[in-house]
Image (cartoon, rainbow, N blue to C red; front, side, top):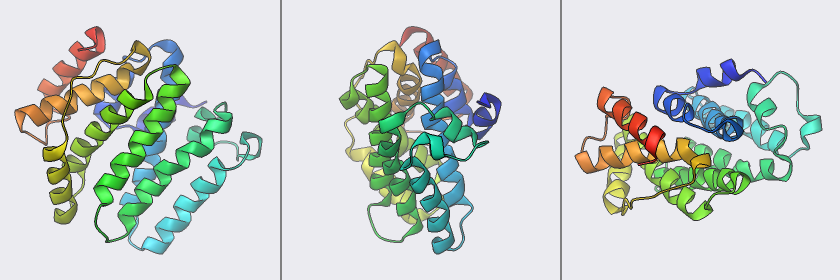
Length: 215
């Protein structure tokens, strides 16, 4: 597996969060984060929705196949090679990103719900609490969307959902430390009411504290 190629897909907050993963959880966590970013890249580069849907369908088809049939040389698929029956469950993430190719309402919520479902699958594989992982991933995704989506309509939807989310304190097992870091930074950003600070120096310091101590 080309871990360097996968790390290159990740923005700095995700890469920093991953650095606190225990050894056994590193590759599974990297696989989910890298798949998320691969799909994000497809949507970001798409100017014609139909072409984007075709490219996303390729990933949906691959995840629905046995790993033995996957093409060689794709780093994300290599990282998911031992997921077996759990790999098809990640197609929900494809559905979430595909929703951004449309123009109907509720796109940010669907994407964030899809990310939550993907992290719930990861939590189950790592022996963690899927319900807490779902909450954490949803909250992180809302802040991430507020920071990265440029469409004013989507930004407004993200802002509305951020205001409605409870932002509970969550404490997850060490296997889910990358998600703990991402959620902790997102919660700090929300409570500070600065929705564009995920990659700031102060967020980096918060990530270090959460990564080391879990809070």
